Length: 484
Image (spheres, rainbow, N blue to C red):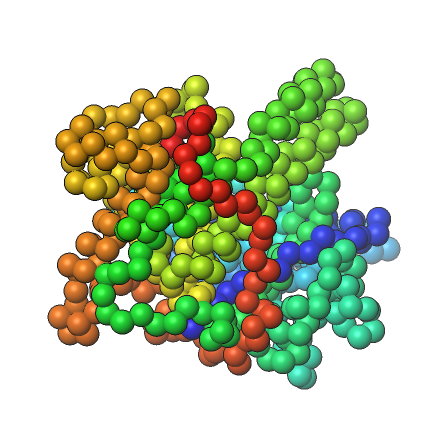
């Protein structure tokens, strides 16, 4: 199965290149707002009873914007000759030749996706939180970003990584030129050179005073040596993953054996909280609209960006450790948004990044041919005995040892929950069968089935991911801890 993956690089841009990147980001924002204005204008005309076609899909919005940018509504000029006569000359957008036109087209595509999501959410065909109607993007509150597709002309790609004329640490974009990057591009260049990856598009964005470029590629499936071997039909081999605050991750199998425990989570938000408070006070003391306030806001954004990077890096290490060693994982479907309503535990719950960990484990497991199953949200994994399946009363957050009142079984609270999750997955997949194929019923992941793009060649074992991380794995029961 082919997979989509992204490589992010930090751009080492010159002052002139920063101006060019900001111009493209502004063009993307302008195109989005103008397309939205055309949609609202057409909707107003339609409400009056006048038959009109409302541009709704991305393709229709691209055509509507291209027609508008060359019309007199986009720009015109009055020319007065020597005789005093005035002539109106249609110019359209005067700056449209200074930016890559794909930036505006991709902005129209984004608006089309937003309109489709709003329509599906309104009809009840979209799960999750209700999606509102798209709104105009403001320059002060919108992160500068734009996207460019990769096209091929005369056998030469428009987006090139490590071009021989520009050096290995460079990315070449159309209408922008060569951008120097700080990270090594060796792995991506090797995959492109051998035909194991094809560039689809590049996204350039600015955050915390730094410009980054994300190259999204369609890569081949991982090498068989990096994938999990196929298992025979059956419900065994499941490992339950319990996420908590005392221990970020506790994994155990159905036999009660603890296979992984991560107690040394970095907690980046708690560590950086004094600095974030000090920087926030500095921002509030500066006058609005002043240069000092802009610099203080940039420092605060850099501190928040560092917190997010530390958390994301550690979550990837934990996910790699789980995915590389186990092919069947089951996680709780935690209602994180509801848990954050507890004002005493909101900061401690949001710091570990439980939702991001589940998302990373999900797509990495699909890459390696494994399985990830979410347990029901109201499954009593914490207060159920893993030995006799007796459901007891709810445990206070301070109780870290589970003791069954029926059979007297005693175990660590997190380990007991992980074992219950593994047992639930084993029973669930053993009972759910497809009568046609006589195997477990699984839903196709995104990218499977019909409509899939042609596959590239097979990747090498070196392209499977990062090296196994060094995570302290300790056994036993912690003496002190927080909430599970």
